[in-house]
Image (cartoon, rainbow, N blue to C red; front, side, top):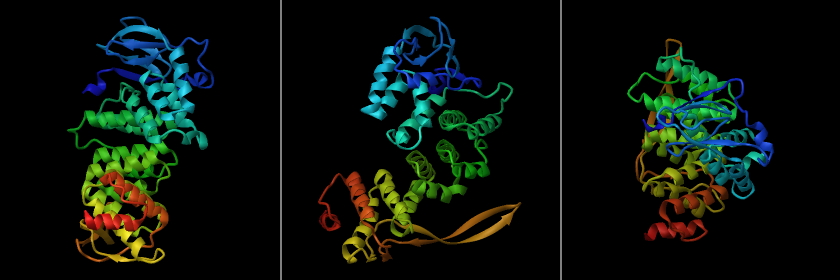
Length: 381
């Protein structure tokens, strides 16, 4: 696969973040060598010779068979210019840092907390780190079997900090993609559940990514909950995309049911947002239901409505079978068919605003700022 053409990086356990000093300084007066490979790839290095297919970086040894170093250029000026972008466009700063091989900038951004971290889009940051991580191979050479390699990577990832665990999750995804025909390859269900409950963002995101790659339907409900209630956008996106990869229709059904009936207002807002990002033509009907409740309920009281186009599976109760010390939930499913009246919970102003924004995303229309404007548009279209 093209993903592996660039070669393999081996993590150096003694100095995983040798570029810490570069974060605080401006880069001025420092020598920052950057290796340019024959395919144009830029990699921040410690030293490298022209023609070399192996060289040291601040994060380990980079092996590039068939893709040798063309030249080593000075990167201090580029780094200084890229850092100026932080105060103007944080996400462009991340993109440029990744493009120029300054991985240390991404790792440091991943470790920020509070207001300092909020300037970065967590999806952009994690995707950049995961992309780099695909080229790292820290697994000991004695660990050869694909499942053993994946287990080693998972254990290492769960013990690593935010930035390094994002790199390792990128490597795990690459391992899964490389072994697509191996249906027995994957992280255990217990580990995935534990990962989704981790306090570390990149651990939760890694669990969602791996569940999606594995098609792990047994943790469908925890994934749905993560997609709607996790406090980090990167995790919500990974969980939502895992659900969509497994079964798009069922994922949209889950978001629809949450929009109509979830007890948490925050989950209903997130469900509306997910429908706007990933919905289909029938999603327009789904989004109109809470607008009808808001417009016709008088002060936000619930209102019955019947015009939605999707059959929605509603889990009513569970039969639980205990086998081999494992609780296997078998849901009893009721299907709400098109045309059936539905009572929607109280619709808040925030839910209404998000629904109208999602409708604009899906349709490109903007009939007005009120639910009544959208209801009129819906009737006339």
